[in-house]
Image (cartoon, rainbow, N blue to C red; front, side, top):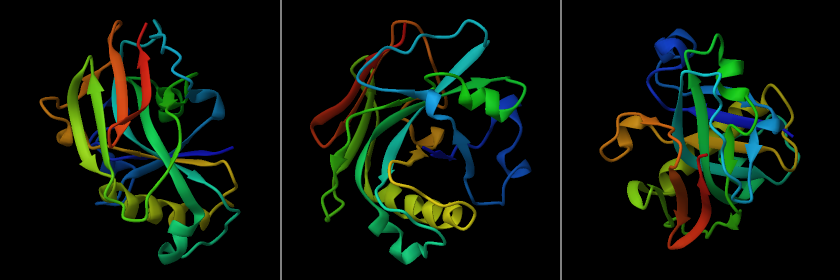
Amino acid sequence: MKIICADNSNTLYNNEPADTFIKEGEPLVYFRPDSSILKNGKPFFLPDYFERITVTPGLVFMIERLGKGIPEKFAGRYWSRITVGTAFTAIGAENISIATGFDQSLSIGNFTELEESCTTDFSFSINGEEVCKKCIGNYIGQANRIIARISNYCTLKTGDLVFIGTPTNQLSGHECLTAEIGMRLSGNLDRNTVMDFYIR
């Protein structure tokens, strides 16, 4: 299983500018290993071997068909279920593989079928305080572009995941979220809670 992630923040590990690694105006796309998945509401245990870990909420799209060289206009046919996800990234790690690929560094909620209208709201809260609320439609176009782009290089298979992170400047009152012990992180699709867990 592949986990394809799109980083929409303006800085990456080691605080280097994103355009050092990618084309201007495009998100950084990278892969996480399947060992990074954390699900079923299990707590995230804050590693003690990193100085600081950031929290990035976003949406996760599940690939449901085998595909290679997918045109962007058809990419929406390759997924129908989504959920809320939380990506943990170690700031100051020696490379992006270590910064993003450590065990249980991507929490995912329960998947749900997406209505065709695409008007569903996505929200993310920390300790009951809502820090992000957006229409899912804001993420769909980027997900389809990522699916089309990555399928040019590798075959997408049923069960692969695509995580689209929320830009840090769109988090209410927070330029960057730092993971702290005791935090409760939850994500909703409309009024349905699909992700809810603690940092220990």
